[in-house]
Length: 548
Image (cartoon, rainbow, N blue to C red; front, side):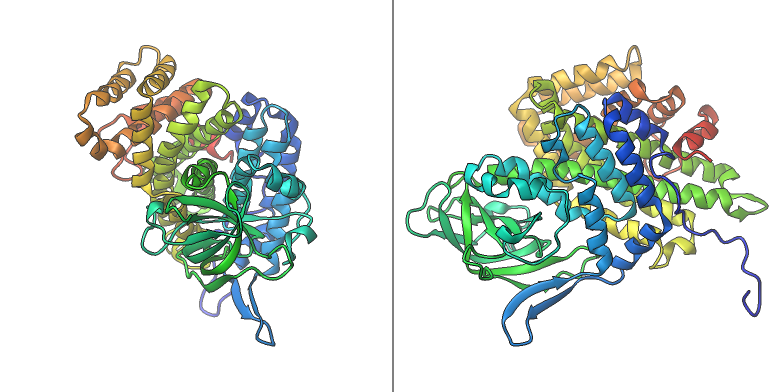
């Protein structure tokens, strides 16, 4: 008791629950994907993540942030980043749950959906630890094309034992990989990079190089190696495997200038580095660095979609928990009509984002099918644009539900709000994603039309949805000099139609009908909660979203 009053009508943050058992839509999606064999392990992981102790660790490692030790006590350059013990604990949890390499190592059906579910569950509690996990996983399909490197690294990439020691590759049980693309002058324009790579002896495929230059954003500098884009002597970009330690056991000359002081993603270290004759190995052919790194980015963009869906889910869960226990004007906050409209809108958005995430994951599993490759190549960047943008907006809306309790810096809502923009920016901004969608459409318009036909099969005789599909088809007749400016319009409508189709196919009618009627309403979209609750079953939507 305070000296002046009793503390009443305050609601603690949600913790101490199973993130899987309270998510009926996710359980259904896993069953549809044929991932039943993975569900027991995911259930154990969800329970461990939901413990109050895990939430406390996540809060601490975003407050006790990484620090850089540039030199040891005798002045030797070490460039070592020190983390709170909780960082290592959460990375170990993720690795030991086999969520790094499992989709590539395990041949059972549903593996990609199971991985996406594990990533989605982890991202609800702590997102920063998913950065090195994302880059490591995305490096695997690229490294598989390099037989010599793959033979050396395969076991360490597939290993489920965590090894946080700072040692040469050969001495590690398991390893983490990062990426280095962005430079000061270029940003998303990787072709403007100036970092150069000179061959040692005879260059060519698999040859050794020395790199000189810088990276303005170098993610997770304590990773055991990075894939780095640099210009080869002919001026074309190449992709290089740059380990933290040289083969002779000395530290590689990748010198960390400072750690970034970021808005969010604070548990994870991002840095600025300079390469001073750094050792690297060419991956692929000289001049093919951008296609090589884009293959990696295709996977990391999927992770951005799933990660943003995770933030939407956690924001919804925390907001619903708060609203169901907070009294306002004589009623529970969740009983107030206007608040119910906001909560229902958040619930619809969350389920739509999750359904799309797992559908994309299944496309990655079935990428030998041309139709599934269209989902990968075309819908993934569109989804990254839309879902990541929605996470930025709606984590703010969820924070408002908690009022001042949500706005304080040490609350989970504040952390979600600060974290959300990173997925929208990293691996290509919104405009870059939309341009990527437009290029994919221009490259293969027939695949785009086939995708729209596939979506149309879920719409039956719904004239409004079919009119939207026809409008997208009509965009192909737009002159090329005008089409680029419509990129955001095309990407957002494509994602909304894909989500509507998935909800029509897989969710209860009260969810699908509410999503479709609201998203096609011209009044929808300015702010959350503008949907017409007179025609939707709010009680059923909220109960499905998080069973009371």
